[in-house]
Amino acid sequence: MSAGMGTGMSAGMSAGMSAGMSTSAGDGGLALDLGGVRGELAEAREALAKAAARTDDLLAALPEPTLRSPEQRAAAASATDAARIRRAAFMDVHADAVYDELTDGRIRYVRLALLASRAATAFPGLVPTAERLASERGRPQSDKEGHEIDQGIFFRAILNSPSTGRHLLDAMLRPTPRALGLLPAFVRTGTADLGSVRLERTGSAVRLTMCRVDCLNAEDDRQIDDMETAVDLALLDPSVEVCLLRGGEMTHPRYRGRRVFSAGVNLKALHGGGISLVDFLLRRELGYIHKIFRGILADEGTTRWSRTVEKPWVAAVDTFAIGGGAQILLVFDQVLAASDAYFSLPAAKEGIIPGASDFRLLRTVGPRLARQLILGGRRLRATEPEARLVFDEIHESEELDAAVERSLERLRSPAVLANRHMMNLAEESVDDFRRYMAEFALQQALRLYSSDVIGKVGGFSAAKSTAPPG
Image (tube, rainbow, N blue to C red; front, top):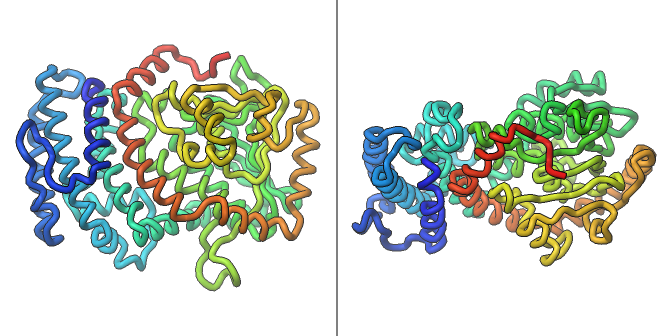
């Protein structure tokens, strides 16, 4: 989808889906007949596939998105809007049946990417195929058709259903195959180098160090995979009692030799089309971040009293926690910061939704400060009084190491784990999180392909800098 199509479509899709599209919607001035996709599953599947094929044929006859005339853009927008309204109507009725077919009656736990791949095969026209996504993968964001919006429609419906949504959350809380394969060596040696994250076990504490020196620990699909693997290993190792996350020393000229926590989303990767809805934006929230908060879902019989394996987590923030780096702090049990560090959620500047921060930050700092941070782009420095709402302790840089060790020792207390479990249960219910993530799946997909986001990340790429301002 071209940049010129994004804003209007985002607004129209959002408004239409919020209304539930209970009867009909506009399609180039004509009424859409949604009866076919709302009937019995077999007939609805066929009707959806035929309608999607017609849309594909129309788009295939047009030039590439950035080369289209205003009239061609309008025609493409009308066709894709109509197709997406049909998909949403189909999922409104058939989400549970679709999910059951893809998971063998919920016997199997299927993660996000595989679930979407299976849906593309079993229900043609519902979500993009792996081949279609791969063909768009190497294109700049402005040159894509926006097929990931269809994935947002799909996952919104799955997560909105209490039965399928909870099952999908459970699937994402299970350890990854990569972590299970690395676990024996990690238990034996106490070390693992995953590329963008290093792990080292000392005593009963495990230290996760983010070490993307090329981009100040800015996140992309690769780092999300490494982070989830690292979190899995930390939680699965039976000798680990407490976990620490910290940024490593950087080689960037501006921060050479200094630790940096995280610069947030990798905007160069976003502009280049390398930040995906499923493997990045949804996986990070439902995967490693949710695991830090909720724990790993264990196989039946491996734990006596709980379905999850949980551990306390400490974060140490050096220099800054920007965007995604700030988001993850909201699930930690203790957050320590250097006195010259700052916390920033520049969602309005970037144009995307800051993960689950809209959900969690309100209760952490209150609605007024949350709006200042997210809507106004306020930078919260560790020395400001309000920073105590985000950082539990603030220390001079040379004193931070010792403070971290004291924090790790405190959280080894036997009663910490039980109390942590109960506080997290009271603070954030699974269903509240599930409902938030359902709406996030669609709204974030729409944001990715909005004209303002495409313009902003394009401007960022032209500036050729990963260093944050100031």
